[in-house]
Image (tube, rainbow, N blue to C red; front, side, top):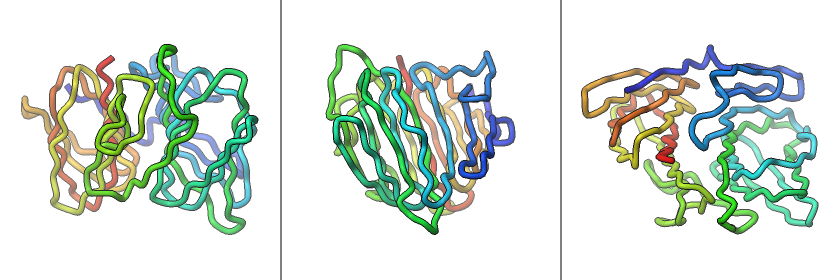
Length: 233
């Protein structure tokens, strides 16, 4: 089953220094039916003005995945850890109780555009505080997983995140651990088809809830960047 979540249905914010689109309830945007999906708590696309910073904050027990789409970001925490990520990279922060985190747009002229995901972290799992990876490794790559296999980022949860960059007409099959997944079009448009031949078209910014499926067939109808977030737990 595929249930669409069109970009225009998402929550939006414009503070001047920040423009944002929220898939689930976040900040001032609240929908009691959209508090997350399985262990996926947050899925935001945000544009931070040149030179601007997010207010330093303490997170709940989550893994925070930032996928840099344009620009450069600097991340710091109150224990002195520091990393920089540029266009085409992703940073995973294994947040800890009581630690303050900050994010800053390094450029004085270019906006910082990125996707941000929060995933509930298992309290029994420990992980490296900061991990970084290129998102340009292949047209299809495992971006994050519970074990860090195939060179992926290691999560503290039973979640597999697949990253796709497909040219027009290319297709990719993604096998799921089931029974839930979320598909997000970052750029471009694509068709998604299930083994039961249910088909849905997504355009830029659209998402889709996937339920009770074991694989997806994705076909790019324009050059496309997308995520498949496999959420079996």
